[in-house]
Image 1 (cartoon, one colour):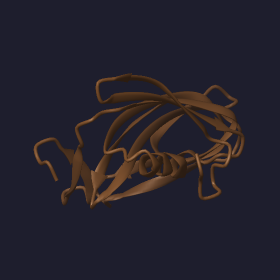
Image 2 (cartoon, one colour):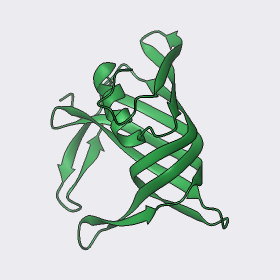
Image 3 (cartoon, one colour):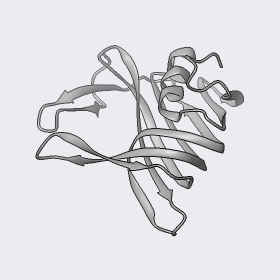
Length: 157
């Protein structure tokens, strides 16, 4: 997969097709950044609806906890190597672009787990992501209560 330079080691393999549904393995290497690579994957493969899971390792990460009163994320840096024990998310269309929404659980050396919205994650040595691309697009709309895009299953655009 050609990238913007943030994820040069990413490798993609189509695993299966069932009708118009496709499943891919997306394998990350040391130094690859996950959030930007998910966006690039969506653009390259014209993804408008997908769900994914992953496990692996991080050299550093930033996660977010959403402060509903302030309508913004509190950024929590995790600067040390850690285990990605769970990464899940989806991609849907917001304002004409495919957007990834990812949550992660990361375990640090002391055995503590940290979870939240994934803002940035640099891989090391690997992260193994499995993506199921659905044929029916999903669209997000701005939810003014939270100042965030949320999936609205009803509209077609």
